[in-house]
Length: 503
Image 1 (cartoon, one colour):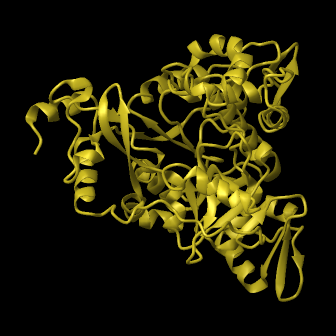
Image 2 (cartoon, rainbow, N blue to C red; image 1 turned 60 degrees about the vertical axis):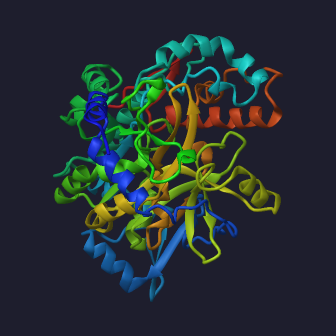
Image 3 (cartoon, rainbow, N blue to C red; image 1 turned 180 degrees about the vertical axis):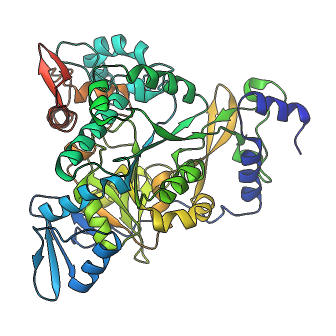
């Protein structure tokens, strides 16, 4: 039972009462009882059929009749670089890239914008690499943290310039790369009847208004405006789904039935609003997915705003189109900084899925696999979905995606938090492609401000950085510089990365 005072309190804090109660009902009726930590039997091998290495020697083949049928279904010509081997067609990287580029108008680019960057810039959290490492970064951290605290992470600086000044934001860079890709498409294939790489996003109640204001400013800035004017299109036009907040629930020590946590900070009838995890995207973005499919879009990328390596990849699009699989995901070899996220595992019954470190697979289990000599493929939080498969099943996916309850003991009290992890959709799919990618190309991510500083080269020569972390930092910096000079169309001028005229 819920008191009227508690309901009013929840509504005043922006909590979706109906969704909160729906999750509570499912829990108490045992719907989530089967959600257990993953027991990994091992990790899949890179076989270049279901786990495909995206290296320079990449080549994908399939029966000629099947390949021609899929190309006809997508109204695509056979690429000139494709090789006819009789009963099979082989697609080298150049052929795959052409297929993917031709599909840019039928591929949407989706951004999970996340919440505010308060924990991103939290001083205690940023000491995760050790006090010595934090000391090496402390000066720049103190300068940058005020620009991040309480703001949507996407509009905070994505890197530090060599002269020490803040760089462009995560969203400015992604929007610029998309415009540059659209210009390149026009030069190769002419104007498209559809927008090239149409944009969609998931925001939250706490970030949507500030993001909208930021986009109005971005439209007039030099990093985007000349490119958008050349294309005759807005730079920041998104289909948007706004993620609701859900309430916290009673701590597991209170037993069942679970109830809504109603004594936040010790105050009666006081709820605690919390995000429900990015996995809610299948519910929140359902109208956007349906609208995209209705407009003729076949594929949709989905990725985190804080990953500078997350950009549409034509080779991946071409591979997914030829494979006929419902989805594909990026993975890279795990490094010392990859401590939060998921890994690709294989269960005893032969299923492949992403197991989130902590909620789904213990870190000790991960270390056990590594100690046995396994190469751990770390989830890059990038997915590519076939909307013909996904859209008819959105309601099923949204409800079936595991909801994991974790107990918390914080200033607000002792409660449990319910979250869905996007990439656990791999456990629902009948099958999928896994792309083994270069981390320093596709996964330049930042869950903590300290990672942004390390990627920017801050403290690179400081002896307080452990050797393995310093080496990873150096590789991330090289990846960042390649991305800035390449798909982001920037050039280094007098110690700052500035937009290069590419109109």
